[in-house]
Image (tube, rainbow, N blue to C red; front, side, top):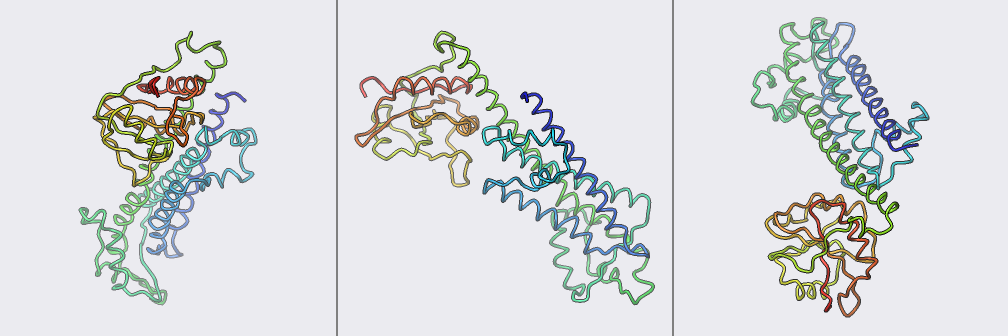
Length: 373
């Protein structure tokens, strides 16, 4: 299966998940908003579907993203025997190198946003074509118990006064099964703006932002992978990289001031020796494949020197991380070997491997140790 065929199959799966989410959201919303025999819709069930469930799903998505691993709800759906086999055969080809986790996270956002769009489409169609009577029923709750929660839910759109609730509205739209009259006709429809705002704030807006974030991260990973594939192809078809000019530039000095970004987890004596060679650094930050909240952002006005272990092969995760680092000065990768005595020159093979890797990263160069080391 070629790369283009695989990408086409993944796009078809994305379209299928979006269509499935849209249909499920439309039908489920229609079922909930259908109400009872008198057309009365329980407000609490509506809020459960349009506010609480989307927020719970959003928190679960964020948890899976932070913790890593897992395929999300989209991955679980794709495991079901509902999909054409020639499409699902592409899923085992997704690895961490190809952004497997990011792809599933992206598809979960497509599925969830499509579900929300289906819900709101059904809601708007029913508002246009019928008179939805929003009431609420509860054996345990009183209007005074509901008011704080409903006001808290409506806080994000507090500027829209017509879509706010009040104790009087809650009291007058309470429904009793033994009361054949129920709430008054002029009042039962006043909830529609509140429910519309809840769908927009707790479903459509956050899911749209999550979808844009997921798409951006996934496309960034694809660009990095494409660069590495081209690098590999050149590696296979070139006898020597020096002749074909695909080695990154090698420098032996860095413009001061500079920040050291430690990808290698080097010991303190190595860091001290690096300062002796290249000059005193202004700061040192530990960096990892996924930026953590506690990581400080290096100053963009300074040179950025990324310390790596020369004997370890370059990884796609590192390339993805480096693409997010901005600097108005030099951006350098420093491959270093070390032992108990301190740093030492990397082997020529290791150095050239890092130069080939760096050549795929626009704006980056390799920083080499001076021959005296």
